Image (cartoon, rainbow, N blue to C red):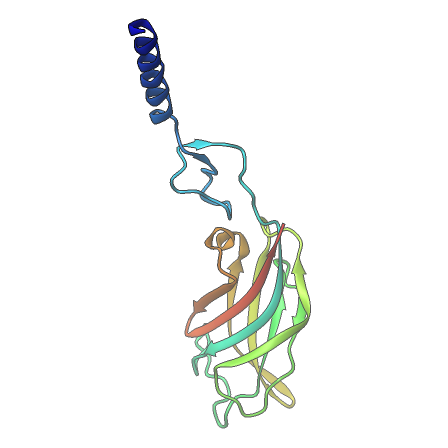
Length: 173
């Protein structure tokens, strides 16, 4: 009986020792959307977004002087519109202009613009003031989508030279 009790006690101690040394497993890649900050050992479960759909663009603010130091037409309230361009400055989408509007202004991007490879893609967002014969450049910003995939947020905000944009994206695998 004593041998049996000793064997069970030894077995229990070994089980507790090995289980307490077991490392937390999970995704250890901080750029993955399922990153586990408690994981000590990578289990191969990391997942990354590879595509994004741009759903909405909001112009939060703009300056009366663009990033080139030029004053754009400030004689009246702006008639802004936005262009979404790719890294080669091809126009992917252009919104309609809003007459005599001040920020914030939100446009639905319909149909959604899909970016197929977010690892190498740069989006350029330009805002112009439509003034009949000449459209005045107001501002721009560039967005590297891969910088945002691990945040688990669908909202991206970027500011450059007083112009602030927000975009709402849907991340896709």
